[in-house]
Image 1 (tube, rainbow, N blue to C red):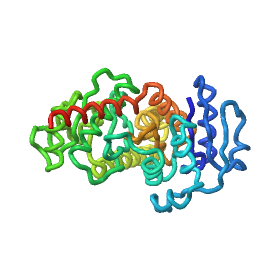
Image 2 (tube, one colour):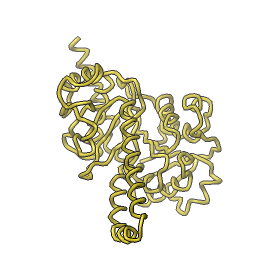
Image 3 (tube, one colour):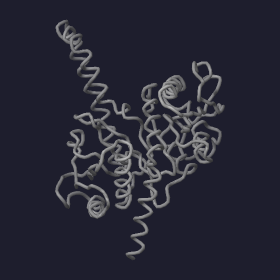
Image 4 (tube, one colour):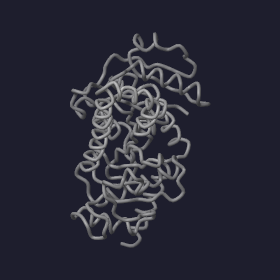
Length: 335
């Protein structure tokens, strides 16, 4: 299995990227990784070079760059060269913790879409109370979605959750303002009807307040709403821990209490950290493309590599392609 990784993308690149890569090649059999980036910065960090290659470039797409323009103009940027490795078949999948918009652009313009998929979806797995997590898509790849797009998201999410996460018949919920049939705007009403007739385990509408309780294995929404949900969850978790820290540090009594529950709080923080599940997959592209969190540490990169590996091993892209192809053929026959 061959994975290309943007070594210069993310807040802690290339240090944490390299650490995650070295952990991955030591844990995963038959894994070969190509790091793309400045070899003068990468080489001093490599204490193990087994199954690790470097493609040297000093050009980088930053968070300040306009995504589409940067991908087109910075042809030797680490993120663009990473996507090209997949395009020409030298890598089976790719991972970057860099500019999200640029990665989506490189995914579309360089890697390309699966035939029949109108728009890709950015799809992280988020934590639930029971620890199983749920897939949320889309969280920002396509803010102006159509009903057909949401149907495709549901199908891709179902296939990924079945193949990679091992859930036999994953439940699919449509994010809405109420659980009753017929709720929502024109987009959700039409998407609801399409999902009812699709080859998925659709359970109907779900509300945002229930998704962290495990209301569905896959929650489908448009990119605008999904991004708002994702940022709200992130912000709530950060605020909650900030308030807890402030409370525990307010007096000697609470400081003693904090010492007694320190390990339990770390466990809770880990449970709420969605990087434990890997990165956000860009579903709908011709090969697995993973967006790791910008603040990813070595462990998060390791998990993203495992995630990409599972997508390759269980042929997620191929299954999406064949499923969409069959649906398109059935549609043509009916017409």
